[in-house]
Length: 129
Image (cartoon, rainbow, N blue to C red):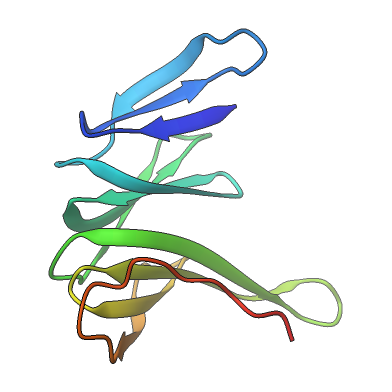
């Protein structure tokens, strides 16, 4: 399945075997700039300061609110315990408001706001230790 987002505010799920649109839905109040799939959640963000998480199984929607401008990038981070269970799950978002925010995925609470850039933060990546 390929998920696409556009200036038209619509997410489309395309079956790559058939080329057919499996489903589509309006996912934002403004243009979509980034998508991120994590487990059963599709995170959608863009020209709107709100990140929306769509549960692809139940249809539930969760919001992450706090940025003051466009959300330009989203990533997820999972830290596991030695026994393989999940210790923490974060959503990280970067914005045109010059910040990166770290969110608790389960609660939607912003845990930290990272400040330091003089312009919008366009991209992020992790270094493996």
